[in-house]
Structure formats: structure tokens, C-alpha cells
Length: 81
Image (cartoon, rainbow, N blue to C red; front, side):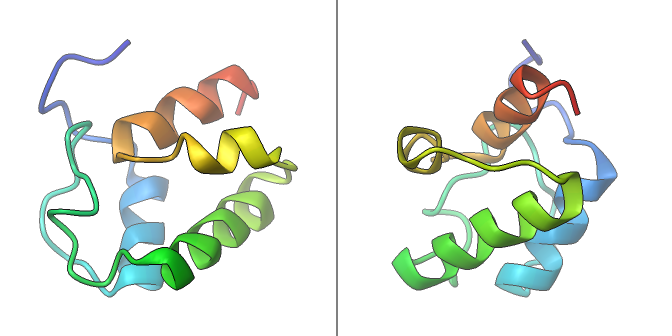
């Protein structure tokens, strides 16, 4: 597990930029409260971008657990990507 406020791998930061038009620092603790455009519709876009970029398929439970950039990082680690 990453240390709090640890930066996230560049691919995730790039996806946040593309999906949310967010270009601030992306750390493990970055949540929808920090990202103005992270709403339910853009959450679906985030899931799709992750699935396409990393060639994975997320379950509904996995989609629902994505409540921070750190959760994205942990999920990708579990998928071995």
C-alpha cells in the first residue's frame, strides 16, 4: 500500500487529466471532493478509461470501490497491471 499523499503512477494521473480535465497533483488521497468533474457520469468514463488502458474488466463491486486515486492504484495492483 502507498504512503498517504504518495503520488500515483503517471498513467493514472494522465487518465484523471483526460477524463476529469483535472491537472492538479494526483495522490493516493485524491477523491471526488478534490476533483470538480468527478461525478457519477464521469465515474463511468473513469471505469471505461481504466478498462481500455489496462485491458481489464471491472466487476460492479470494483467499480463502486473506486473512491480515490489510491483505490484505483490498489485495484490495478490486484489485477497485476
